[in-house]
Length: 279
Image (cartoon, rainbow, N blue to C red; front, side):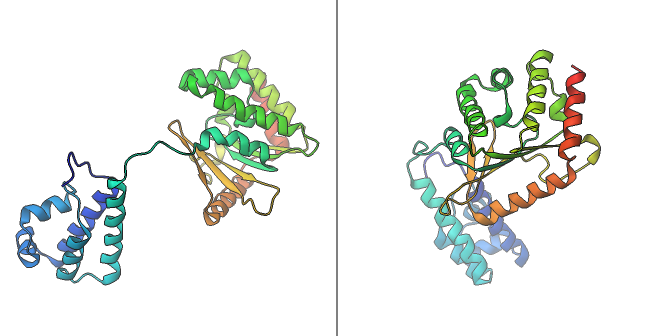
């Protein structure tokens, strides 16, 4: 067993598979151990991921338990992958999507953004984004500024970035940075909504559940045929790109569903104006 072994979630899933095979056959740990030639203690540590399960041991258990070949082969592949990951030295991240995102925004011709808590980054004013950074992670302020500046610059281009944004009404009511900052941000949204390249829609409070609820994402499209659409997700831990086109298409369908349940552009503008007037 590797020194100071700490099971990954994959290795714990492998252990659950082994326990499930045994339980489906109605074998006790002792009986199964006798059949395969393991001690019951070893079998228990494998099932509970206290030690890694080797591909050879998994194959032996699959044979004894008469598990269909496709099932035990899948678990063997999982164990081989887990073993490779464990034996590889940890390397620093070679590519940081969070730092790169501003560049993709600048290169894009279309941007579809769904946010759940904040005004989309490309629409944020400096005071608003600084207030968010101060409350969350001041070190990220420069990254957010680059995204905001890239978006603002592209919106002013002769061939402007086409932006469609959807977010819930709660974003309008969250007074980020205080009433003065928030009112300026809402007035900025009203100004942006007059731009023909911008569509801004609000999901009203009364709509109930809606597509992609709780899962913000940004979908970027590009002018070159060789550059496929990309989805960007971000949490406070890290950002990530999704480039598998099946998953990108799934996000595009979710976004289309969001636009359907949201208020139209005109009604959304009225709601933004109402929220601004209350500050």
